[in-house]
Amino acid sequence: GDDVELAERPVSAGSNDGDRAFPEDRERTASLANLRKLVSSPSQEPVEPKPLATPDKVKPRPVTPRAEATDVRAERSHAPAASLESDLSAAPEAVPARVLVEAYWGLWRTDHYLLVSALSLDASDQLQQSLAKNILGAMASEIKSTQVVNWPVFNNPAIPGNDEEGFRGLLRALRIDCPQLEFIALGLCQGDEWADRDEWLKDALGDPVIDFEHSLAALAADPVRKKALWEKLRLLNRPANV
Image: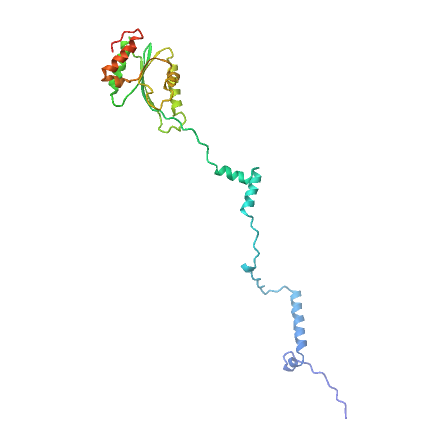
């Protein structure tokens, strides 16, 4: 009977007996060690990024309807949206068509007369010039200047100043230089496009002392027309030898 004192045998960290005898203590000790490590120093291990949300988990953003956007713009412009749409869809107002007149005229000036005749492309310029000289010579007047007017300047009547009113303004400007001369008209404004022909001619060049319907070219080979013009010239009490 001697009492035997049992000494506690330490358990080695690598002992298999310790692993079997105290599994809970070993796990608790490891957890505490990990916590102290995390608190004392930041972790150097890379943190795995959180996965992005999948498309079916993304909440769609509200979209402003087109009608609402239109109303906002309409409020800024102080006009209802319906009114703006109506203005855009409305057809433009009809613009009165400009009248396109054509004229190829010759003007001869003397000390007493202004002879204006329609010219023809079918007759030579020399022939028409000679007839004008003979008519004015028979009226005891010598030609001082000759001018040719070809209208319109452009084929598009929409161009400002290229319409009938522009032509009228041109003739008025020519007449200003010689208001005292008696005006003789030969074959002027005979087409259907000349509305109110007599008033138009009077407004552009003044009252003609002779208004003959045939031009110089039409007189050239027609003795009947020449005789008719001769009768009109006699009314001016001038000698005539046309």
